[in-house]
Amino acid sequence: MINFFTLGQIHSHTLPNGKVWDKDGVIRVFADTPEQARAFIIKHFGLQWSNQEARMDYSYPKGIIADIFLAPPTMKDFGYQDAHGFDEEGGWEIEGGEEAYEAAVEKYIARQPLF
Image (cartoon, rainbow, N blue to C red; front, side, top):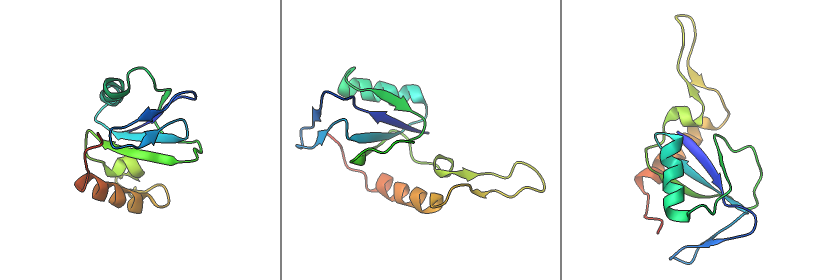
């Protein structure tokens, strides 16, 4: 399950590696539940984050600044729908879903520690 977190309007987070995460970017967290994703964000950022969303409908200048994998990505996270009946076909419901899923799997496999 994907969760998106924004980091508020008036503060920034400087990571030990020198990267700065702020209001202009979004953190994408792959987790089994929204509660697991929120607990991770609170553990690492305290209460200095702004919003948790189930999908990203907004435009941020830096876009997605980090992918955090607490669980592996799934095809359903990227718009794949199973067939629901005998005469229905499953498939990708959004354009680019398959390519985005494959890119996320590659990131998951090659993931590096964030902090």
